[in-house]
Length: 255
Image (tube, rainbow, N blue to C red; front, side, top):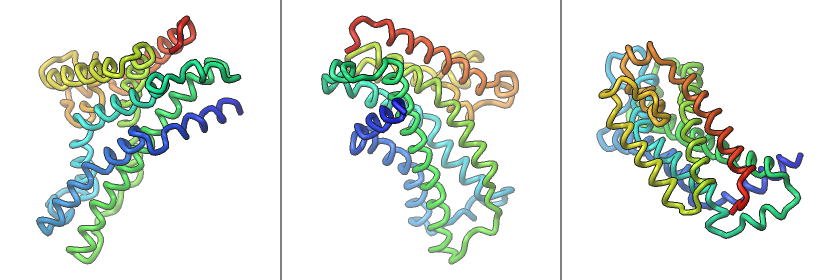
């Protein structure tokens, strides 16, 4: 019950915050571009031509534009904004005087970050659906004949979400460690850019936790066959969270 109340409190802090707007704008940005492109050119999902399923083709086109850079960049910014909220407002000491164990504060903050990430996925998938439905209704006056593959989309979303976990955990760790907001942003951005340069050029790029989301769309069949990026995501996630928790609990000056 105490954890639930703490989560509610942390969630209220994010309302109308930069992180909240980032989830909304970031989630709808790419689908909105596709929607505008379809309407401007008078096109619909039928533009994808002879494919097995136009919904599947559209799904992977939209996601491919997102996972390469915008998704990991959004995770870096949102995690840093939420975690460092207490540093920016000088309220860590006030928070620690409340009758809450440290583990409750720690997990409440991270659960809110997970919640914001799920919120982003909701906005993105809503935008994806609308970017396919609206042009079809306006231009073709009907929806595509193809069957909507609910199970496939859920599985794909889940896999992409799993690849986000190590990035969230790593940024959470860095943001808890450094008071300067630019440090977690800078470290995350440098690691992301370096990883994107190495994707396709280095066989061991999977060692970077920032590679897993791009690899879901850009990975070669050989790489994806030899390396289970979802297992690696879980290993990194657990490792970073254990380090974060121990560092937070043992830190003498918590903000």
